[in-house]
Structure formats: C-alpha cells, structure tokens
Length: 279
Ligand SMILES: NC(=O)c1ccc[n+]([C@@H]2O[C@H](COP(=O)([O-])OP(=O)(O)OC[C@H]3O[C@@H](n4cnc5c(N)ncnc54)[C@H](OP(=O)(O)O)[C@@H]3O)[C@@H](O)[C@H]2O)c1
Image (cartoon, rainbow, N blue to C red; front, top):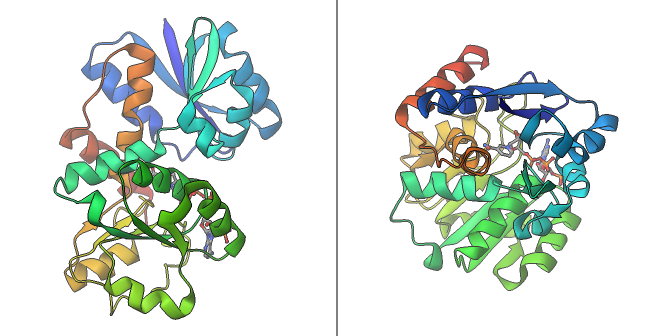
C-alpha cells in the first residue's frame, strides 16, 4: 500500500492527517497518511532516502522546510524561489520537492473573494518570514503592483525587496496609518494572535473600511485581529482556508486526483481546531 506522512518536530499539532485521510476516504484511495515526529538531526536523511522507503511522499512542517529544500534532488521553481519545501514526492525514482503555501493562500482568497482585483490592489503584509515570502511571491505572480511590508527585523524586508523587486517596499512606523487607509488587503503572517501568543497590536482606525483583512494563523479560527476587523465591518479571511488549499497539490501529486476543498472538510478541521483553541 502507498503510504504518505507529514514530518515535523513536534508533530502533534498537525491537521494534515485529518485533511488527507478525509480525501483518501472520499476518493476511495487505498492508502494511509501518518504523522511522524522526526528530530531535526534525522530529517535530511529521512527525506533523501524516501524513494527507498514505504512512503511515496510527505508533507514537511516546522522546523524542517529549509532542510527539506536541501535534501530533495529536484526542487521545483517555487521551492527554489522560497528556499523551502513543504511537499515531497517521487518521480522517476528521484526525490522532488515543491512549496504549496503561496498557492494555498491565493486559492483561499480567490474562493472567498472571487472579484478581488490583484492588478489594481495595494497590499500590506505584516511579517517577513517563510509564510510571508510564499504569499508575496504568489501575489507578485498575480501582478499585485504595490506591497508594503512591516516587520520587526528590517533586514528581512530588505531581502524580500531584493528578491521581488519594485512592487515590494518597507512600511516605516510613520507611514503605517496612511498606508492602512489606502490598503485593499491586509495580511498577518506573524504568529501573533495564535493561541498562547499575544495579539497583533495594530490600530485599525485608519484602515480602508473595504479592505479585506486576512490572517494565516488558524488557531483560533478568528484571531483578535480578524475579530476587531469584523467589528469594524471589514471583510475577513481566516488561515484555515490556506491550510486546506495548500494540501490540494500534494494529494494530486501523490494520487493523481485533484481533491476538492469542500464545506464538509472545512467544518471537520474547524471542529478539531476548536477542540484545542481558546475561546
Ligand atoms: N495557514 C497556513 O496554512 C499557514 C502556513 C504557513 C504558516 N502559517 C502560520 O504563520 C505563522 C508564521 O509562520 P512562518 O513559517 O512564516 O514563520 P517564520 O518564518 O518564523 O516568520 C515569522 C514572522 O513573524 C514575525 N514575528 C514572530 N514573532 C513576532 C513577535 N512576537 N512580534 C513581531 N513579529 C513577530 C517574525 O519577525 P522577525 O523577522 O522579526 O523574526 C517573522 O517575520 C505561524 O503561526 C504559522 O503557523 C500558517
């Protein structure tokens, strides 16, 4: 039987088995998707020897995404751009890797806001880590002309400017309030607002009332930033949609079936998140 897994350290928190085992049942695929706790020192070897193991592929989560990029033989263009792999698969006995975080965010945004005009929009991204890089790359590909990045560590914004060019700029503290008033999409990519983390401290009073506010944190399902935005009347996008949509391509690569992100799947995973998440 073809098996697939997700590796991370720790791995207890991963919802990937819930998502993929749901699809395996739904599409009648004879396989099983497991969680494996792999220590940092063992991750490279695990991935490099995947072609000779019981697994036909794996997802990779914190802290192994950069290690996975170095361990695969054939990272695709998206993985090369991000220097990180979250999906590993075998082709012609070679271990290949890609990164589906950016497309997961885009698919989630498009499914909830099909009329969002990428080519005319101003976007503000809070944070400049791995999630931010994946999303900024995907938004660049969609032709977003103006992306302002606000991050605690300024050097990381400089790296993004070098990589993605003229559409990306740093937002200084003195510019933030004015930038928010012209913003069409505000995205939190930091862990602030996650269970057991402090909330994102951001004054929203100048925010464009029509701006979509997105958070890639999905536990809780509605973060304090999203709740405050909702109270103001702004449309919101939670992080669970990104998690579900980023899983689609892995399943397709392993099993040859493009699975659907249905309401039933959303509710299944949301119920699991609510079990452990603070109110
Ligand atoms: N929904 C999904 O599918 C999905 C996918 C990927 C990630 N995520 C979530 O997104 C979050 C970020 O993940 P990541 O992989 O991008 O992490 P990462 O690479 O470690 O980047 C974290 C970013 O958040 C900033 N940050 C962290 N703690 C902060 C604090 N206390 N105050 C201000 N800024 C802070 C960091 O700033 P510095 O540069 O200054 O350190 C950095 O820009 C996590 O909660 C993760 O679970 C969700």
